[in-house]
Amino acid sequence: MRVYKFGGSCLTSPASLERVRELVGAAGLPLLCVFSALRGVTDRLLALFERAVATGEVPAEAQALLAEHRAYLEPLPAVRRAPAEAQLAALGAELERTLLGVALLGEPSARARDRALSFGERAAVVLAAALLAEAGLAVEADASADTGLLTDAVHGDARILPDSRPHVLARYRGRRGVVLVPGFIGRSRSGAITTLGRGGSDYTATYLGAVLGATTTLWKDTQGLLTADPRLVAAPRRLTQIHYLDALELAHYGTRAIADRAILPCMQARTPIEIRGFLHPEEVTRIDGREAGVLAVSSVAEAVMVDFLGTGRDMLRTLARLLSALAERNTYPLLVTEASPRGETSIVLKQGDLGLLEQLLEEHQIDEQPLVREDIGLVAMIGSRMRGRVGFAAAIFETLAAHRINILAIAQTASERNVSVILERDRVPEAVAALHERFIERELD
Ligand code: ASP
Ligand code: MG
Image (spheres, rainbow, N blue to C red):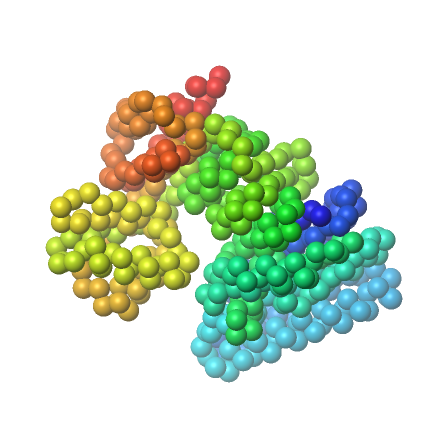
């Protein structure tokens, strides 16, 4: 068995589903295909949801969204089209009921938001199933929200629970044909629909691949994992093969090609992940257990640094409380440094997580008043090629010093796969370009 996942950025028109058919047709059976929502649909559903709350009405755009999906079915003969249209209409009605509910309530509920978002992936499965079946493939599809994935109850950013394993095996093992599964969604123990965080369809696919012992191929319109962000460096190189742990570092520190939570299940099960170009299948990054001696530069420009100066009495306990509260919300800092007798500690987070941190400080009545710096960014040298190399950290600092870039905080992991520096945000592009030039372009040429 293999697992394929088709990213929303690839699903842009009926022609793109024709490309899906080509890829599926060329693959061996059995094949599990996980679908994202069509491009842009999740963002639009979010906007619809917010508008319903704000205006007290179901926005007219809900109908337009449904009609756009229906248009994909137009080329099909009536016998094939009618049942798919009926399924789509049922999903549309469910969406409208959810929007109406929050419109009347005038308050956003995280549960209702996830239910509304689930429309995107489920509708994509309905469309793909009809088009693939029409092309003569043996398709089994289920557009319900029951994918066999049991999650925690962190709506909007749920994690899959290990108890999902028997459900997944019972549901998918032994299938023969092409099985279509909506990505991004699961159910909590109470039965509510949950979503797995933005980009969460990858996580659905890799989790299924891990449990089923299959290779997972993520078909995307990106170039896979690169030695640097192509927006910051003119000619980054593709990493054709990379160890799980290095990929995990890249994922946590800035790459948009894959999220860290999507790597973990396969790392534990030792099943490989491939990121492949939807239109250029020869462009591939393979993530597996082989140590490849990778080196890359990563960055998170939208970071914030929260400094606890340690004037409160019990900094360590305060910190423990705060970090465990963050973990409960599936939120992990980019970096934590502590090196002072007073317990002075800096926590660096993605900008988007600052609101949550502030909320938790209040909820947990933590009276230590931290200093928040929003004008900083993080740059990380990543990869096992740094291990055991004397002078590597010195060379990183020298390179930055030569550009007169000031370092505000530093962390190196004991695995020597990551040296992170915090600097002023507007120096991030220059720092990335300088490090890439010094360690990757110059070293390899
Ligand atoms: N549709 C969801 C999103 O856009 C999940 C995914 O695409 O993986 O975030
Ligand atoms: Mg998407």
